[in-house]
Image 1 (tube, one colour):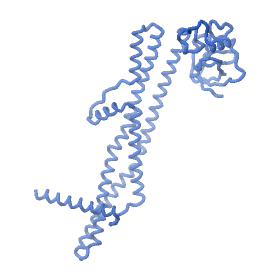
Image 2 (image 1 turned 45 degrees about the horizontal axis):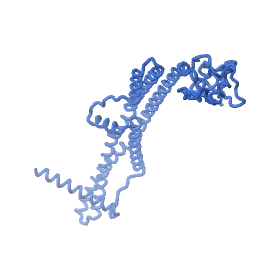
Image 3 (image 1 turned 135 degrees about the horizontal axis):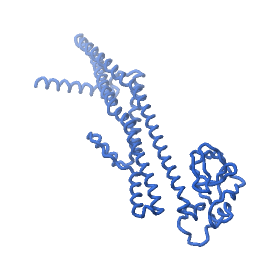
Image 4 (image 1 turned 90 degrees about the vertical axis):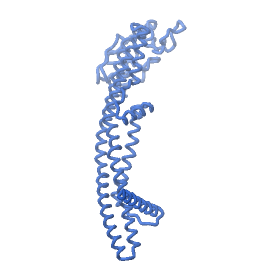
Length: 366
């Protein structure tokens, strides 16, 4: 019991001495041991690393999980060391609703068939998103958290110890200046030597930890590469899924909307008037000797006096019917648009061959 009381008294005395020293330094009434410029630069670099890591971590979490309530729930599961329940992504849920709607409307109807096709693609997009989130969480977010909750806590602890050692050192210097008697000076000099030794030892420990920030940057750089690769893979998957969907929808477009295939695709419902819109008339007159049937006759298409462009084909495309032009990846063709034409399509020419081509399969060069 006496030992504990003495220790508490000693600790209280040390705390009081440090508090006095710190207060006097703030008011300019006591000298302060300054760290060298290299050490200060290490401290500044470490603080910057910690602050930016926190911001990047938080914003990446927002990117991967925009729902704040879901983020809080996942945080609590993680802190409680419990497995985070698997979530259905918005894309998967949308795909499920579309499939259920198709079954209700009739899966063999044109609308039902299209709902099924689009719904399956939404499910694939949702699964790709879930894989991307999982990969990014393991390979990018976890290393950032490990730094903040591991290395940075150790650095912060050692920095606090260094601050205390410095206050002890400066307090000893102040006592030595005030000492008058020889015996008091000798005791103060001994305390100063001990305080200086402890300060130097702690400064070296802290310096080594701060220099380790360079290794942290290297590790985070590797993780950043993995995050970018995962993101590129995810977006490439999404793009390919949508290209595949466009092929499926494009191949059935003429069957579903035969009278509006080369006109405005938004004109799904029959017009109230018995005569077609003016834009449709001008387009049909330009591309077909018989504007009534609404089909593209490639042989009759006349390129405009200006506005033709070269285009590079990005992907193979199989023509759905005689109105379209089949494409092969990396070939160059001439393309142009006609008045009232669907903006998702262009007229393409390859030698004597002509036909409609989808814009998404092209890279316009000039």
